[in-house]
Image 1 (cartoon, rainbow, N blue to C red):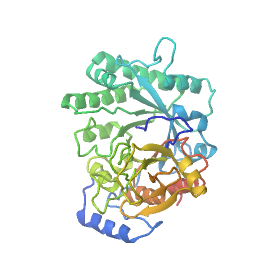
Image 2 (tube, one colour):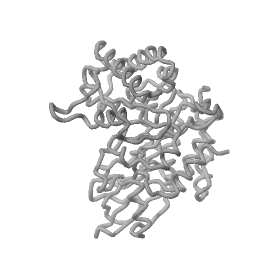
Image 3 (cartoon, rainbow, N blue to C red):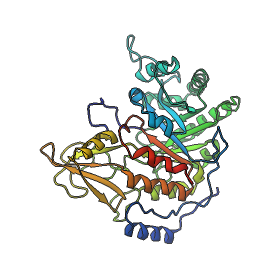
Length: 398
């Protein structure tokens, strides 16, 4: 789900819906001519989300904030009040389906260590419904949990035990296999979710089951059988970021809303349109990155060839550069995202990220498409960014 954690001192950075090609073309023409904060029309959905606030009964969009264990000490007061649900990331599962607690005899797994701190209330977390994220410790563990009946049952027991002891009211499943996916592995993942859901029926406090998926999940052979999983799942967290990866040979947008110039294989409008042919729009949480990627580039031109591997840069760091006027801001009308150029290091660098204009466009897309809400990756990357939380608060305003 996430970029590799880095030290803070480093740059971190059914309604069944069918595509209507003409409407998408008109959408693209409209948004190409529009300047921020004007918004793209949605080709996706006309069905309002069914989510209701657990406390007030007022319909609202879910704002799920993922908090990685390495950022728990950086949670801001603004994020605590701005989210509707708090997702701890993550507890790992070993190949037997048990919670992975130790790296070796002396060293605990950091995800487990910080989970223990969470249970002991030695770290402050928002007073919001708690979601626990579970993921395999590695690919071997993923394969064994899904292929072994015993390991799969152990994993479900481990999940339910953790939910019970923490008082969590939801679970996020983040299984991301690499390489070719066999039909058997795909079927076994569906069986895993089915069995998990059946076990959860006995727990009245568990109200949220979500699965994290890649944006291309509807059109590429992935582990997620969306049509079968949809009735078993409350939300799909669509990880609509990392469209341009750090190892890319060219700089490019991290989270492109569109791609009028056909520079890339995927973009958000295209991917969400594909997913909603199978999944109700109200079950989709749109991933919002609170980070970007920075590359040394050949020159300052858009999508310039890179001369270094990209590094993550948090919105906090980017805001510092903008405030210090060491980053020149440029608007990419092709992807409806900004990027910045800098020569401060002695080399030409580019950072592609989100700003207030691009975030407003994404939020209006969520509203006009009647998605279920958004998922933020990740809390702790958002500090001292004055426009961020006021902008996010508009999602649940009339």
